[in-house]
Amino acid sequence: MAYSFIPLVLLMIFCGSAAGGRTRLYSINGRDGMSSPSVDGICKSMVETQGYVCEEHKVITQDGYILSMQRIPMGRSGRTATLSPVLLQHGLLMDGITWLLNPPAQSLAFILADNGFEVWLANTRGTKYSLGHTSLISNNSAYWDWSWDELVSYDLPASFQYVHDTTGKKLHYVGHSLGTLMALAAFSQPQSQQKLLNKLRSAALLCPIADLAHTTSPIVKAAVDLFLAEELSWLGLQEFNPKGKAVGKLLEAICKQPGIDCTHLLNYLTGQNCCLNSSSTEEFLAHEPQSTATKNMVHLAQMIRKGTIAMYDYGNEDENKKHYGQSTPPVYDMTKIPNDLPLYLSYGGQDMLSDSNDVKLLLDSLKEHEGDKLVVQYIENYAHADFVMAVNATQAVYDPLMAFFRLQ
Image (cartoon, rainbow, N blue to C red; front, side):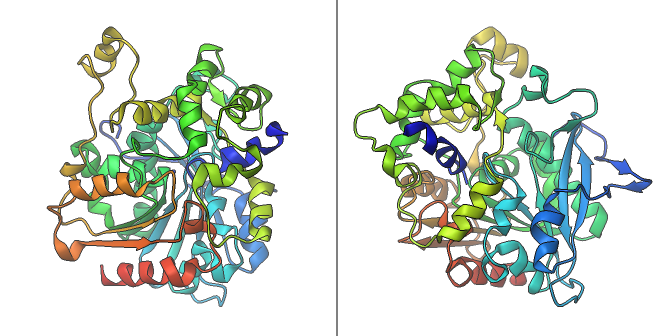
């Protein structure tokens, strides 16, 4: 019985700069960045079916990964967007469909478009529509040699650059879970600051992830204690495929741990979500989960185990010196985030992944932030998935988020 629950478990785990040069635009059919819509692409399968105009775009990162992006340039009424573009970044084992799972009146991407914002959906490397590379194929282990460090250094700057260059405007950013970690890490690094902040108006971070030491999810803690991601790496499985048998068999071990009831895995993983409906969950399972790099899962496990916000640890001093010039991985220092960067942070009291104690550590790092540049929202009955799938998220989260954007 445990195995049948594994895809749902993985789905919800985290429900997401190269030196010099400009981001290269991927050209298909002679149009820079604009790609021919694939038969089953996100535009055709999830956006146009709801009556919205949608464009498929591609961008190449400086390390050669070809990322899919979707642009919703107007609301369902047909009125062209007049407000700043908004880039939506999903979490781990997800893709841009994260923001489209509910009906239009309850899905953030559609709500933003209908309120005059130009919407861009990001899809990180390794997800279904971002499997391309300029020289590698996705069944090559070298393709999967990355962690969220590379999402910070390459994927995020490429997405920012592309949206900024295409629209000619500064953008707002919304991240959920791992998408918040990517942003926070980038905002804390001088090299990334130079690439991102002059293109950014503000950032909204839903279920912010920085510290992970206080994560209370029994599922996640068991996976970390059992070194499941590391075991996959040792077995030579560099792609972490949630639908694969190897991952499923290893994760069955979690369900055998004392105190874990596999009939209630969603609650054990994310916390008690208050406000999901079954139709959204079915839509969710119809499109997800997505693959990521096993190295990425190992990196997240390192954060939980060590209680650090640091770059990937290669496991010995020589390897770390080879990559970083020092024996230990460099730390992402959240106190280095500019104090005048407009931030909107929203977190829930029932969230076992973005635990309130870890969020408080992040807020302590931001204590010198300018008072009018930091808005913090706490929703007592929300857990991890509520922020992207709750039926009442429009009133609880998205309306105040848009009000915040309009002030920036």
